[in-house]
Image (tube, rainbow, N blue to C red):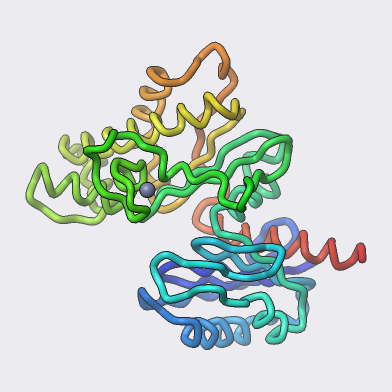
Amino acid sequence: MKLLAIDIGGSKLMAGIVAENGEVMDSVRTELAPGYDADFLRDTIKTAVTSLPYAQCSAVGVTVPGLADPDSGMWVYAPFSGIENLDISSFLSSLTGLPVGIENDVNACALAERQFGVCKDVDDYVWITLSNGIGGAVFINGALYRGASGNAGEIGHVNVCDEDGRRCGCGMHGCLEAEAAGPAISEEYELRTGRRLTAKAIAELANDGDTTAVEVYKRAGFLIGKALASAVNVLNPGLAVFGGGLSNDFELLQPSIEGALELYMFKNANKELRVVKTGLGYNAALLGAATLAIKKANDSNNK
Ligand SMILES: [Zn+2]
């Protein structure tokens, strides 16, 4: 079985043909201008999809940032763009003639980790994306846990700095996302040095021994660990898996994540917890889309 996988991000679109074993056979990447609208997005998807041999695929999976409703196939809301209530599933099914599965990108990554990655044999885990924002997904008893309105896992909005912390996009202060995502790492480094750099550039400096850069990553890791400890105390997962762009430099974060767990986690109740980096690498979200397509193809066959 082959699947058409589409990963829509805030600044790029990836589309690919993925085999059932997770091998990416063919893929295209297109940059998206920030703040893109629905018409631009539909044109971009059409160009990407028609450049791939999708006729041989059994189903389509699409991952979107923000809120998605897998039952209605709608992309409900994207915080950084004008996209709202976009029926992307109907668009893709008329474009390709294939059944379509949709999910938000973080949930899809967690599903892919179970299908192809380090969670194949793990029933209870949390998946955390560290990027320009911080998102999370929760697996309980071998299934994705959605919550009452589909928004479970928002670890980015756990408070880690009381009320005097940085203002978050959600309107609160001191959320993990506002304190430890990529932009906060840039801001914290600038506060200490007067130099504005990307989180990636700061990671490179840290790896070259720049002590301020190391400290800034340590601070971010500690706050991530503090939020994770709360999640672990409530959920008792076997694994905490980290993905997203910042996880490329996970070794800069891991010691202080574990240091915070040491302080804030109920250790006797969570002896088995392991903190790891995703096994899916750069293609995590694309493999997430492929996982949705596999499920959709299997559901269609069973009808
Ligand atoms: Zn927030």
